[in-house]
Each structure stands twice: as structure tokens, then as C-alpha cells.
Image 1 (cartoon, helix red, strand yellow):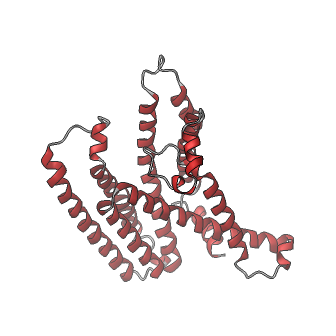
Image 2 (cartoon, helix red, strand yellow):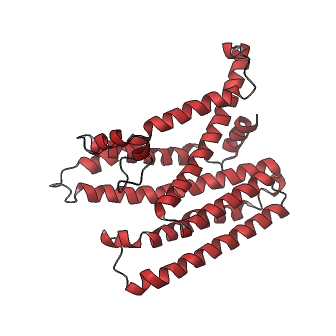
Image 3 (cartoon, one colour):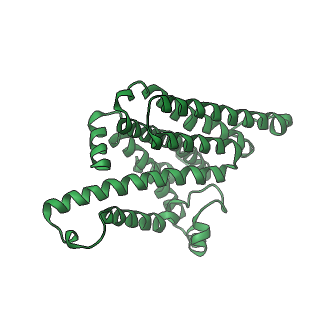
Length: 293
């Protein structure tokens, strides 16, 4: 997978007559579609974990509703909203055909408002079902948060929504990793009698160790993984490391760094799908033991 990305970026134009910027744009669109699916899968996994923890007896009956909610709102409706917001950009790149003037100024705003009402209605139905199934407050709050974010897809500018969407994904993944990693360290220490056992920290010290480590790595690597952004002014790194980002963008390594950013994202999506499939009973049991053990 990683090799394919770099081959596509560096193959000579005499062999593949497509300019490098167009290749990068194609990979970015693939990253967007795959990323939306990846986010929807994470939301589905979280809802299933909450359901199995709060009321396992109703887990089977809510399975289809969760899947439709996560992929229907978290993928299809988000995709529609972002395409509507980015219609002018996609037309400039000749990805979408030119639309009449009335569409951009009258029809699209109506569709965006209708999409907002649709998301609110679906979210209300999901919350009602969760209450009837006694699914617990965490699951209800997660459904509400997801509904609010998808509403933001129709109401916010694309960069604002994507920052919110990716931040929620990062926080959720970070929380899961810190909780699982902390519990794993705690179990290992109890078996091997490590020196951490003699420390005076609270019982949550192991989660904090993992959390601080992952936060530090995320901040340090952010400039390298954001260099493939479509335009300047739309990246966290330009605020945190402005001079460093300028140097990266104007260095001879820029295409390699774009490849690293894209390939790492694709590899992340693939590994998540291949390893962390919460539809598998053994995976759910392992996750449950690590999260709540």
C-alpha cells in the first residue's frame, strides 16, 4: 500500500501522463472518501461498546440501527454536505460539471438547511431508541454529539467542520488507547512487579503515562502529516510551527513528505479495518477487557 502511493507520485510523466499536482489531488480525494468511512466505522464501534456494556440483551436489536446511523449520517450525509460546500472548488478542478448560477445561490442553501433538519430528526429518533433500550447515558451523549457534528457539516465551512470532525476522532482514539494501554501496563506491573508499583501516584497513573506520550507524539508529527493539505491557511501546524511549515513546503523533500502523509493515512485506515473489527466477538471481548478490566 505504501509502495503504491510512492510509485504513483514518482512515476515519470512519460510513463503516466498526469501531472504530480493532479495525482496528489486524486490521492487526497481517495483519502477523504476512505477517511469518512473510517470515521463512520469508529463511531459504530463506540456505539456497540456502549451498548454491550450498558445492556447486552438489546445489542442485537440495535445493530442495524447503529450501522445505518453511522454510515447514513456519518458518511453519506457528511459526504453530501462537503460536496455542496466544495462545489465551486471541484468545478475549478473540473471534477464536477459547471452548475447554473441559481444552484449556487438558491438551491444549495435550501439543500443544506434541509439536510440539517434531516440530521436533527434522525438523531432524535436514535436518542429515543436508546432511551427505550436503556442504553445508558454515555451512548446517548455519543449519539447526540455525533448528530451535532453532522449538523455542523451542513452549517459550518468545510475547514471548520473537518477540524471538529478530526479532533473528535483523535480524542476518541486517544482516550481508547490511553485507557487500554494504561490497563495493560497495570496488569503487566502486577505480574512482573515493576518499579512503578512502588510509586505514590494514583491508580490512574498508567493512563496518564500513555496519554502524555501519545499527545506529545501527535504534536511533534503534525507538521509532517499536514503538508499534503490542499491550501495554506488551513492547517494547525501553520499556527504552531509557521517557520518550520514554510521550510517544509519549500524544501526538495515536499513530494516525499506528501507521500508519507498520505501513505500513513491509508495504512492507518487499512490496519484499523483489518485488526480492530468490533463485529468479531473475540475482538469485542479483548476490547472490553482492556477498557473495563
